Image (cartoon, rainbow, N blue to C red):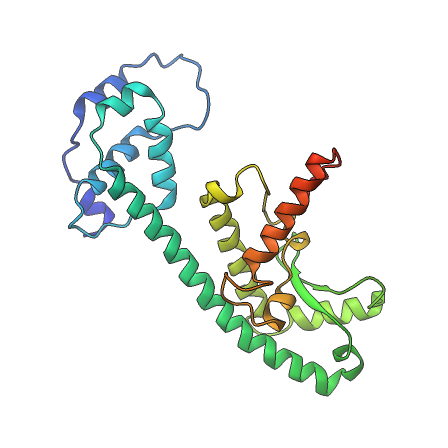
Length: 244
């Protein structure tokens, strides 16, 4: 059953919807704006565990915000185990697709390095990696004083010119950002990740060179992010916090 079909279900809590519409429209709005009609539909989806209906993580977040109001929490009889299971499923699905993307990147990057070795042997001998810059393009990484400006330009051109590498890397970076936003228990208040600072936190060259595709491995994207979070927390304690 698709979402449009689910929309035809009868709203199970008409009294909540009515009360919501009767609220003073001039009342000051604080916090996230909640679409209560969409919240009712999300509740309806969760009430039918035997029907496969897609529920997004954004819809679950909106429902959680809705339930923060005591009157809403007491009015809705919802199976929290079901809600948590759906959230867990969304999380695992994103993790799976992120892993698939990394496996594709691994093969492409391996071919890139072989091609670099045959055409640019001097560059191939230097320690380099790559990450995603603010504009979504790939950016070479290397230890200080490893590459000069011209060599950086050549590497950036070669990386971005490699078929599918840029698009797959950007795709994975966006999923990582989503996963971090979803995993509030592990990351909230510890590290902020977005496209503006991604290049400071995760090096895909390091990840792929070490074969750290699984999140539990050293130098995986999760490991790199946790190390960055630990460094940031230490700087905060020292009074030297620098926004990444």
